[in-house]
Image (cartoon, rainbow, N blue to C red):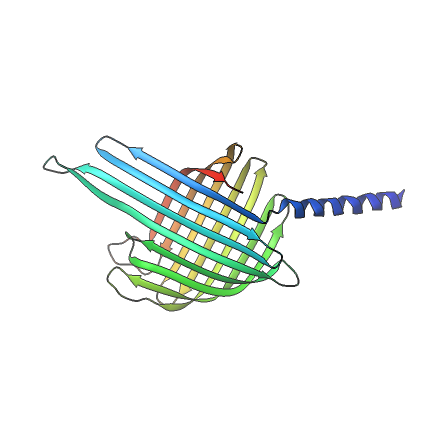
Length: 247
């Protein structure tokens, strides 16, 4: 009886392991689109878009992100004439490659990012970094990993001043599959340098509407320690958007 129970337990463990492996897709990609239009005393058009992709290979686990935001407003001036102006124009892109060691949960990572935010304190911010990545938790519902390592930041302010410096970059990513149709994600990163410390965080809840189409509610934070006196250190963005899973 004990032997039968042991065999059953081993079979269940093997079957769950096979299920976990089969559940991992070699490539996934999703596109996100948000649109807001208002009218009245202030006319506003806001568009946000992004593509997120993940690639899972035998020796590599790679992540790619590209996101943009554009906002245009029309207000009535003192003379009664409409005044049109762009109030937000931002692009962010990043890529991280994780090379798996003999234990696939232990990896070496390389990271690169570029951000162009026309209404921030900076003309551009670019980062390269490398170091240690570890997958701390992975099961059917939860995944958690972190990365930490040295790097270099290339920064130019709106006044043309260079704030390039060596940095230490740390990041974490957590996913909770609440159900077959809903998931919660939390990402955070910080790049600590002598000239500036840049931090980002995004909290999102995604729910399936139908098939490959989902709706996402997200809240983002962007923080820089070294900005001009008339520029806020913290930017926030709350968005509701549609998400389509291509793969």
